[in-house]
Amino acid sequence: MAIRKIITPPDPLLREKSLRVTQVDDDVRALIRDMFDTMYAAPGIGLAAVQVGEPLAIIVMDPAGENEEPRPKALINPQIVWKADELREYEEGCLSVPEVYDKVVRPAEVRVRYLDEQGEEREELFRGMEATIVQHEIDHTRGILFVDYLGRLKRERYLKKVIKKARLARP
Ligand SMILES: [Zn+2]
Image (cartoon, rainbow, N blue to C red; front, side):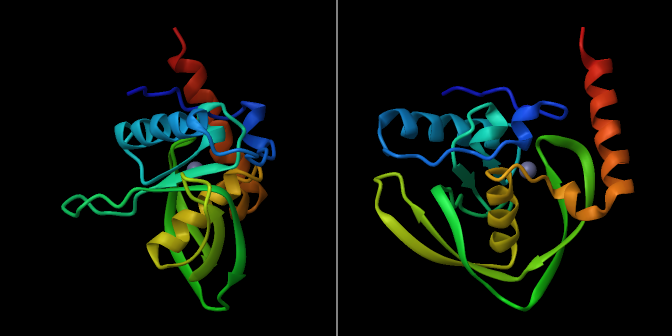
């Protein structure tokens, strides 16, 4: 078990496009285990590999609530292949943008194509909370943060707040 450090702005990696995974091997599976450890320890409900400093197109998520059975899911090279017209609004947060929460509107359902931990191609429909999480995490693999949806003024204010806080916390 290894809990990794979660990067925050202004780390330029957060703005980079993650690389596609060409081979799903033990190294990839070990990274996924670390990502789950890091996500559950935070605690959070989703995490992208770039957030632990590995710019690979891998995301993990678990939408289960506090008193529910865990539903861990890892997606490698996730790609949205269909979006619903219907929208869903949710107050999002992000482990890389701590203590910032704001409403983001996204498609209420998406169909995602990805590789599982065995390297098998899968396609799955995500709805509700799961749709919000999977879209937020896929954004990370493209260098997009949820605050980017909030307009320039809010985005700059939130990022400034995070950067200032990180600077104060440094010993
Ligand atoms: Zn995030």
